[in-house]
Amino acid sequence: MAALIAVSSAAAGADAPSSPYIQRLRWQAQLQTLNADLLSHDSATAVLQALCDRRDPSAPRIRARHVTVADDPDQAAAVRRELGAAANATVKHRRVELTCGPVVLSRADNWYLPDRLTAAMNETLDSTDTPFGVVARPLRFQRRTLSARLLFEPLPAGWEAQAPARFEAPVAPPPEVLQHRAVLQTPDGRPFSLLIETYSDQVLAP
Image 1 (cartoon, rainbow, N blue to C red):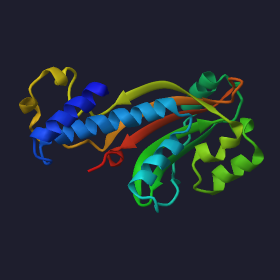
Image 2: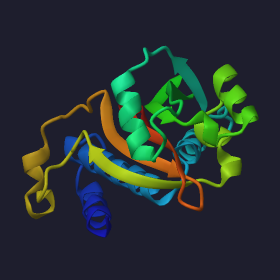
Image 3: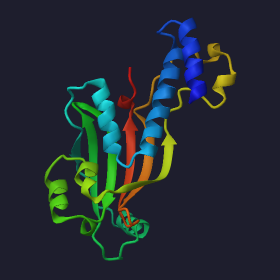
């Protein structure tokens, strides 16, 4: 990260603000920062809320907009194994779009064990657009990241050793730029949720 900031600062003094290379550097730094923030925080919602607040202090709270999804028995069985649940344990699947105002920042698939939540938590998840991380906050959960994958690389590996002119071709981010797979667990190590979070290009500043 230090090398990226140093190179970015030097390039910013030599190139116009509209330079495609400068834009690539900015997006690279933004993705690295977001990825690091997600890896170092237990709540992805809190990370997105901080991002939303930085863009607009008057922005509303992050909301979880429900997306209808069909049940998948095979996926439920895999989740039970991942979470160490009994073969007959109920698994719920909640797919949402996490929004900052009208902007979709991420899409999340959440398979969770309702028996490991309180009745009030389950009611809130079923009937409101409150994000899962906010609802489950009283559990003081911890996040265990299983994988973190960049879906967009503005600059390839080894870019810092090459001439900036090699990266002056314009580039546009794809609709999805980052994906995390994680388990949420209580402080005593008891897991209750498996997440796949896919972050949209809207997490990148223009």
